[in-house]
Length: 154
Length: 154
DNA sequence: CCTCGTTGGTTCGGGTTCGAACAACTGGTT
DNA sequence: AACCAGTTGTTCGAACCCGAACCAACGAGG
Image (cartoon, rainbow over all chains, first blue to last red; front, side, top):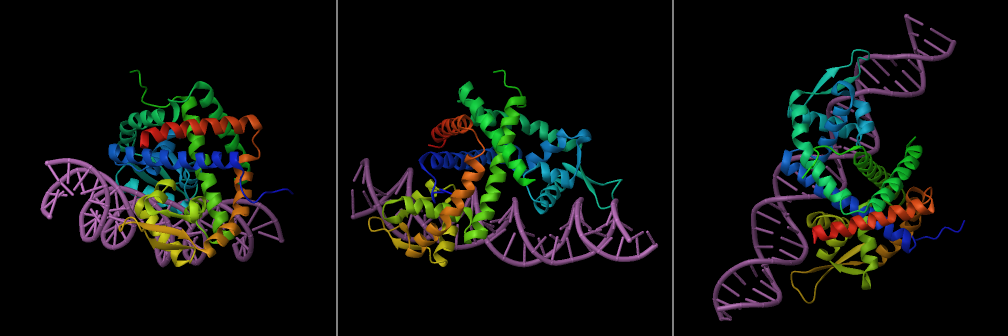
């Protein structure tokens, strides 16, 4: 109907802020993890997802769905993590095609070692410096957004 | 002083929502621009920054600062855009080292052609589906965050 | 049993990104 | 004038990531 071709002032500044914060924060987090633990952000995410799963293991597809990466991207990252000894691959007992990625002891150790620095940075960048209301507003906006998006991705 | 090693429940879910929304939205935007205009998101951003600047031109460094990319990344993207005829490079009159990227007529046209679809998608993903309060909360949270981050990067 | 459409995971090719190293230049200081 | 710390933009090597193509295996319906 009346769809203007450009974003208006409010939309634009919100959108720009969204892009900018995402870019900056991602870069800083990436940097910190690399320097501090030798892990990329995606690798760290994979470890976190695995550690959240019962037994510290998950099928590749579930892992790709939970993390924010494509199937091929996940294959690559898991290969890297396996090379580093942090993750092991097992065959899935109920499906010959399936592959189960599973945290090794070294994987757990690496995660425990990396977590405090990561948590501190996330708190510094993302939580502190916002008032309680700002943080609450941000959180509810983000989760509404996420709910909306989940519908779209099916 | 009492810095827990892990994020608590609220921090974690907000952080995850932030990462997830960023990843999903970026992917969808990337896709739409590619399909619709043959531009990547970073290329589109470069065009937008140039179009915002007086005369449609900007020094490389200013462009890299305004967009969300490294210097080398920008060199690459501008080279692509130049190959496509959307951007021209000029020497900077006041500084021999300087390079000025400048929108061509084709660049303006490409931007005008791409903008409506992009704006519509951003509105669909990012604006609509949120109540006025949610959007306001999200916006103020994001800009507070951005202000905080600018201090850190400055 | 046997299709046959679907799913799981890897491989491959190409494009994108980054940081470090580099060379050319600037502007201020002595 | 000669220096020198800092800036500018590019190049290079490596890592990363994605989509498409692919093969093997599932499982529902005949």
